[in-house]
Image (cartoon, rainbow, N blue to C red; front, side, top):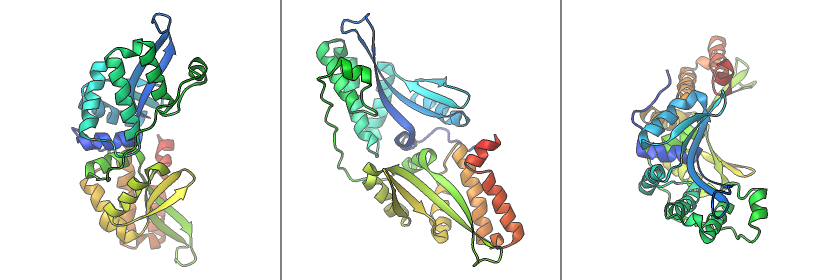
Amino acid sequence: MIKTLSPFHPWFITGFTDAEGCFYINITKNNKYKTVWYVEICFQIGLNNKDRAILEQIKNYFGVGNIYILNENSVLLIIKSPKELKVVIDHFDSYPLLTKKFEDYIFFKHAFDIVKNKNHLTEEGLKQIVAIKASLNWGLSETLREAFPDITPAIRPVSTSRIMLDPYWLVGFTTGEGCFFVDIFTSKTYKAGYQVKLKFQLTQHKRDEQLMKSLIEYFDCGNLYKDRECLIFIVTKFSDISEKIIPFFNKHTVVGEKFLNFTDWCRVAEIIKSKGHLTEEGLDMVIKIKAGMNTGRERAV
């Protein structure tokens, strides 16, 4: 059974958005408008169809928006009318984003004010929107760069406030970004010829170094590793996993497919705790559980 929360805690919504949400500005040519450009701003979250229930609950939390089926595997929650977006903005003003996505939100909020006041229908307002889009997400398309060659990207705001983690933010963020792994590798040290190790992992862009360092302080365990443009928080010490990570997520549960992986992960932890993984029967059980987790679960569906 997939674990869900009803209703989601507000900080869960923010944490999950930090992991999976997107603030988007769409600018397309349309001769119906005096500026010949149509501006649409929207908040969206896209997920695998298996986690549609999460989007349904986020939609219920905000009380606005629509869910669209992109293909057989993907669904997308979109909130885009000014009236509906006001609900979203009220939420994130009260429960601020903790990743650098907060900077995207500040841009988005500025664009929202321009659209709300209908200034995007003027040449000056339109250029302000284009300048914001130039600094947001993937920047301007080739078409927009050609149409607005003199636009200077808006200067990104800088957040220097201390990161204060809320447990519900963390469970929302982990539901989106976290991974519960079981590693099995050969080892001559063990009688069965294999060693079993659990790993909890959270990954984020290196620009969120302050946030990632705060995870070590919050959990009082783990290490940070760099992988190209990413920072990875990893916990592998079994005592830390059994005494800190598992108790935390038993109290503040992840949801959706991630809950299934966490449940299987805990089953393996129990086998390790009882030394069952050192027996052939126990090792076979661990291998079977691992085969049905994460991408293995996806293949089995």
